Length: 417
Image (tube, rainbow, N blue to C red):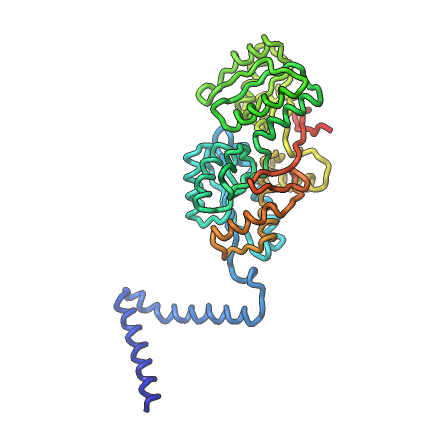
């Protein structure tokens, strides 16, 4: 009798729950109760079947790693952002086609920031709403610093392919770099010019309002004191005055500069080369990774870039198998020859892959837990990439690798042996 009473009680309780659900819903909701229950039963049965079959959780859970990326796809720095977008996209497609990371696929979402700090933060928030777990970005240093403050607060792992300012990583233990820091570029450029006796008298034109440019110049000037050349002119410009460089060029010419060092971006560099040519100033120009992209400036006479030298970690004409395969796949997919920014972004994704495999992270980890695991893994890995062999990372986020010198020859970037 007691057993019968317990059964009746359960049946009455179930009936009351169904009645309450129907009372809280519209007529369509009430009619869907049975179908929802059936779907729940089917889902449970499917999960039980997978568990019974002993299938791999990574390939059957439906979970994915969600990687976001930010950079300028429009505006004056679009060459950088589009290259980062494509380089990361190519790496992700390759990894997914090969089975993903430990069996998990990757979803990718790139947002345009127009090289504007505020828009970059807005893009970051858009990616957060999307469910981003890791960030490959941002592309430029100023935007990277602005976004790094946000990602640090969220404890979200960030690896920037091309944000080179030390302020990108300073005080932010969740941010790591793929490219050289600005100090390393400045020191490396000065050492290269001095060691190879490229010039004895050097002028510098830099953007004092930009952390990338001013950071490189500061270290270049310090290292120049140890090198067998003299800085005969150091002329600055700002974001508010970056179209007319006649004064800076005239001072460099009057000082007898044989080489003008340009730690700036390619758009301003193209104007400087054009204006130097117009005033009859024939001089050697030398830059860093910011000049990578000058051959793609609209309406720029690329013949004026002939002989321009720059330090960069990637040369598309290199003969190693990895570079040739990357360039071939990139050209086929995007119809353009990849630059250093594309290669850095491609490497960034494979670096993430190596770190995830090292720490055993999964998409089920929270954003913060995933970040903690990746931060611990980064100093433990080395990666042979397109932009460096045996790349490694310090706990401060800086990368260890060697630069390469290139010269523009016949309209192409050519590695200087």
